[in-house]
Length: 222
Ligand SMILES: [Zn+2]
Image 1 (tube, rainbow, N blue to C red):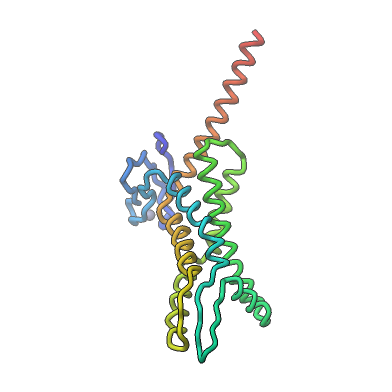
Image 2 (cartoon, rainbow, N blue to C red):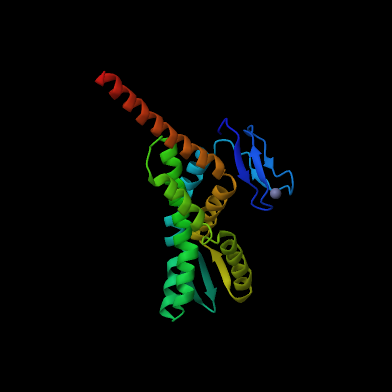
């Protein structure tokens, strides 16, 4: 958290606010409309790192372990997420297959990967010009990772299928739910302002290091 005041515009009512440093465990709200401008989440970097690492460990299991086993009239079928996507493509529903592939597989995976790399690089104090680009991409990719919708879809299909056949939930389903929870929690429990401020602080340090080196070189020349 920076010690300096900084101007911020309320995303809801556009009021320009001179935001003072927000103490830990406090939220900052817009004085006009009440929109939460700054949520208190201590250790956002560590939280983001822990949640993204857990999500990434569970991701391959969620993709390749059976989601559920369906038994109906003596026929038993176990399916994974990739089986479902492949069946959509092979049945000609390629637009639907593409949407499922992007929104249910690629977007959550990229979301978790970006969060992992951003928080790791901040934690290691690694100065790279790509940090800001990764952070901006993370904001954009979250528009496509419809995690809450996906969770609801899984629940609705389970309730519907339960009446039609005997269902046995596989380990893949548990891993899928846990992966989605990690991704959703990393959106809720990580304060993006704090990540941006840490990235800014790294860039500033970089700048002052450059100035120090330049100063030392100037001193050597004398
Ligand atoms: Zn406002």
